Length: 421
Image (cartoon, rainbow, N blue to C red; front, side, top):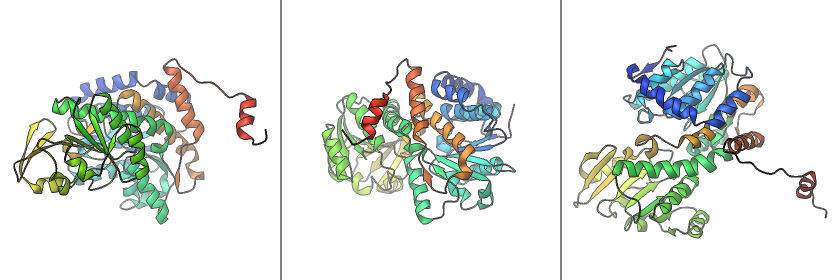
């Protein structure tokens, strides 16, 4: 069934279908969640608005929700996060898609507004958000839709931070679930998913080896920990930069050098930002970098590397490989930017491995299900996903790979819960 979608090229759908089918085949957790939890009628007649990078794993999540009875509409946080073949395939599968890799930023915002208009048109809706994009619009330009939104779940660390800021200011108009803060999300998606996919994207697009390289990771949260781990596994010599002394000490204990960013710039060959903050690498840092330095961002916001400052400091730029831009600095040095300074594993790759996103999107599906059933009774603040749901996702995954865990005996539970000998 063709939906009322706006995509760049519907003829690309066959390639997109193959990608979605591959993701479906390797998503045992989401498939079991679909069969055991989502077919209870909760989603019948409900709108689900989705703002996530449009690639195969996201697409399969939206298909599962649509098959459960939801009216699903999806757009991307930005045009560089859109695979047009996947968008075209989704439209053929009955999911409404507003996305094109050729949209400008203003058009990308309009696509998000179209999602809100469609899913909350005469029905209640829940949101699955990325960087709080749908929530931001619903609290600004589309406040008329707020009464119909039961709640939102957030995919990213930076988005959860925005929700918490809204809560502190007392302006959050519906409950939100910090899907990013579920253990089955951040311990795997942020760490192993980002670690593998960011390193893979840089290696594939530069065609350079990682072994022996001096690699600088800026930020040692879960994403930075994963990047450092995978880089070390490939033989890189890793330095970590942090603003939190405890995280810096943790990086030292994990076997990495820890230096202020300006010092690390003098010896680094590859720089990967993973902080979720702004102006992590600026002109001051570029001036200290060696010839041929490679820059990439793996964090959840697109302003970690000051790309505008890099352009102003350079005498010119050119694309030397697909997704790799060369900047000629005033003194003759050249530095290279991978993936436009945006989230490198998506702008220059296929994103996280399917098995990782299987966990994440099982969490997101259950978040949407929880909000659909209980959103009206939750306070307008940021909530964690109930622990029992997180635990169930982990059990399903262990079962899918033929493994399992023990159960506490009543005596053990009593011992752990009590204080008397």
